[in-house]
Image 1: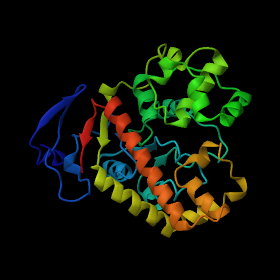
Image 2: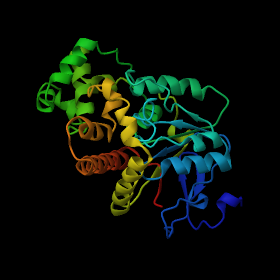
Image 3: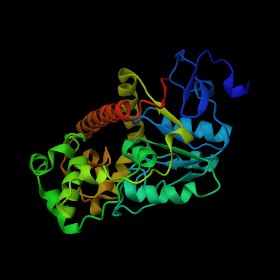
Image 4: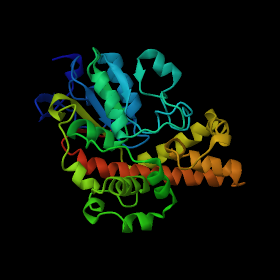
Length: 318
């Protein structure tokens, strides 16, 4: 048995790959290599999990020990204006292993799961084994289950949607589509409304006529990093304090003159809260509390998505 296979006491199978997973929970929060499925040099590795769960550290460990390049699947980490506030990998980490699709877009770029898939298609055609990591569940679903080829939404319709309240968006969206999405997530609801308004077809109709995926799940090593809620809540608060200490407030202040709350880049959690501190005299401690609360709510939505959509993945509980 290889070094990565030692110490395992249970076997299972996902797709076509025999794997072994150590069931015993580790006494600390550090993910260690022998907790993982056996990882060869070729198959793409998918790493999902809620924010602050340790996904990036795990991806770096796998890349360093088993080979590959790390590819971002997080919707906020693509923008070049944010490193600290979105917890992008550090420059030191990027020097160890190549990192792709991180910070490669300007703040005002339009970017969606469709854009991400087109970039992924190019990378999958290349020579490198990909270790794809992020918390945006829609990207992984699109990658392994396909994505409808929906025409671009005209700017005028998007602007109209931006001006509507969430309740109005819900009232004007097809119920069958609403049944498939988190109606508390404004981004998802507005996207459904925009597609239906622009094309005359409900989003679920487009989704039901989806082409084949870029990757079959059985051809990958899919991993979900799950962390118990009390531990995750504590990590989220600790990480935000570290962000502040590292200069997150300065990072947000540098973009203050360009701030547009409707742009995806400025919807990254922590940005609106710190911007409110800078522009509305909200105390920093109050902004911190709001950001931590929003992050915990986001992590809850991520875990709900993953438990619904990723039940066939390898689940690791560090």
